[in-house]
Amino acid sequence: MVADQGADTPTERQLEIYTFIRDKIQNRGYGPTVREIGQAFDIRSPNGVVCHLKALERKGLISRGKNMSRAIELVTEPAHLRGLPMAGWVAAGTLRTADEQQERIDFEELFDKDDHFVLKVMGDSMVEAQIADGDWVVIRRRHTAHAGDIVVAQTEDGEATLKQWFPERDRIRLQPANSAMKPIYVRQAKVLGILVGVVRKTS
Image 1: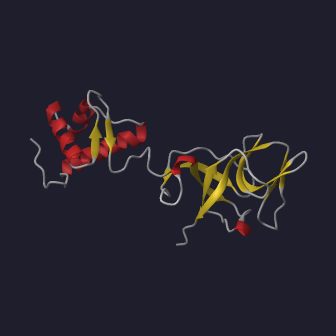
Image 2: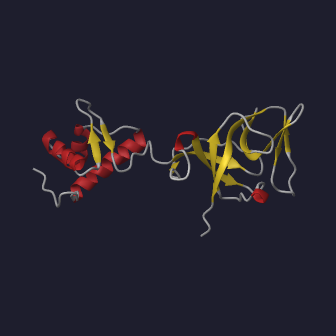
Image 3: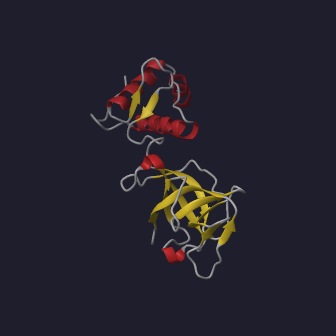
């Protein structure tokens, strides 16, 4: 039997098992089996593992589906739902591809997370719009924009950049908010999203 230190306080071994479960879910996308937990912690009896899992479930750290070998979910910090997806780095100077990442940034109290994502700005082409190098920008997914909107635009070469959007007769002007820089002109580009917020860490 597993001895509990308190009604809601997990034991040291339970916390170790919880950390193992969390790491598996976050790094490979699904939880470990009872056998995997037993092997990792040298617990020979499956019932011994199940006792730990029941304790973690009772203490509100995990939930378990019935008759599913890997149906363990985190209750306190579900990685697949918490925060906004960190989609990559976006250039605010020269064009640079915004490669998708797995990291998530939690701004859900300020923004609707279902159709938003976060980018970290590199460069100073948007400083006159109060967007500086190193800032986090929150983007609402959209495929259209009005002239003058600050957007994440992707060119036909697959490059992404944060600029003001100005469609012209036979081209698109991607306008920096920096009087020392010239606009970028492209024949074709698509809007990936519109700026809705800027987050800056000042210290």
